[in-house]
Image (cartoon, rainbow, N blue to C red):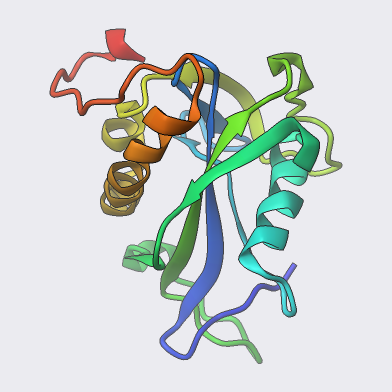
Length: 181
């Protein structure tokens, strides 16, 4: 699929944070890469709104339908990150992509977690997943996405406190170990 690339070279994209009932969040292990974990995300197609992209990607990557989640909040603006030089490609007859410009959504899972199906699509994005502490992804995502993850999680944290029935208030962890996963 070809997505939308803006005039500065950023691919328009949505990022998806799925919160469980206890306030922990979905953390997915990507297919094809030994140990790359991230939140679901995906590029916007021409004519799609960010919300339409959100629900398409949610079903493709995690197998969840709109009735399985509530949208708690979204980032006010778009967050961007640049790709490291080694990830840049120069496709012919298409705009050159230098990074992602993302609108982030915080969702509350309202269905049972068994509704999550990583293999609902013919081309799975994730091969494994787990629930992790709200702030855990900042330390564990690939280095060039850390700033965007930190900004999105900080901006959306107050909404999780309000929107998740059993959620504890997320607070940043300074611990470096994985025991808080």
